[in-house]
Amino acid sequence: MSGYRVTYQGDEFEANNRIYTIQFEKLDTSGRVLKTFQLRPTALYDNEMQKVAAYNPSTRHYLHEDIFTHIASIPVVEADVMEARKEEESLKYRMLAVSLAEPRTYYDTIPVRDTSLVREFEVRIEDLLFEPSHPSYVAEEGDLSVGARISVKDLKRDTTYFAEPMLLVRGAMLYSFPVHVQPIALKLRLKEDLVSLVFPLEEELAYEELTFRTGDRLPWNNYEILFKGFNKSPESPDFKPEKDDVAVSAMLEVTGNGLDSAMAAEPIFLIRGNQPFNFKDEIRSEGLHFRFTSIDPVTESVVIGVAGKNFKDAPLPVEIAYAPRTDFIVLEAIIFPGINLFWFGSILLLGGMLLSMWNRLQQRPVKTT
Image (cartoon, rainbow, N blue to C red; front, side, top):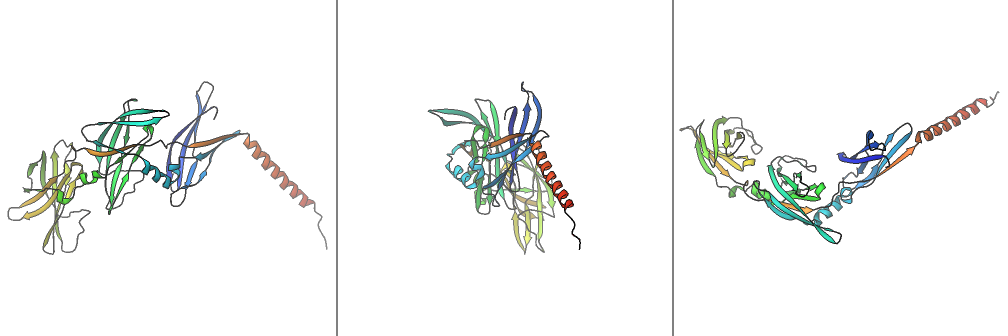
């Protein structure tokens, strides 16, 4: 549009509507901004959210003109879920093992006309996320999820971008939620092996038993574990209390090994029908597992099983693929000068017709009997 600077600022979903925010800046001949406004055309998806069914315009009204906008098209992978799946399956992911301690260099070669362009990035895992979020993820009870905050530095441009892909275990299914870093046309996802690394099976854990009395603080693998006492009303997602249960949890406080603050765990010891049971607790960010295995009333002591899975120093599997940018739209914008004169003339014409009809009806002779 001549005389305007138009910026696609982003989009968001409201039910089936994908609302695009477009900023318009009217410029003078020197490029100075005279006024700014936003228009919000939409793409309407079908009820199954599988495909775009229609596009709805947005208009800015002025006394002397209207500015009409309409989305002509969006990338096919954004408009059709099946096409997005095909695109995902066609991507050529390469695995890069990245530890929390050290960054790795990633080289990406892309074809450019008759030659190739080699891009160089520095990839680092900043942190593991045990309560991750993703635009496509809606949490449900019983979910087991892990994500990673990954920084990708474009060494040529000296610019760093961040992505937070995640993995989800729901029931017997494993789901991957990749992240498309649009400015550098890279897609990142976590390899499924990360789940077994961060959430080991019980048979893979080697528990070491520690005996505590209330107030005892014992060292374990560079940590210090404090037994603060008992909680006689324990709560846990795995523990469903029943009548006549006798249940207590051991209140543990873990410090040391570089922790900024103390972390808590409460494994549960349960007697149900004269049979002992225990429910473990974890400090997932540290890979620590605790089981409350027994109580000795005579010595007033408890036995806590402690196991650890050190994944902080292990290389974590990240997969990276070149993926063309999809953060664009094709927008039609039309200025209708003097459109209000047209509407005023139409209303005036209609008013004149109605007035003449009224006048004609008033002039009809009245029949008398």
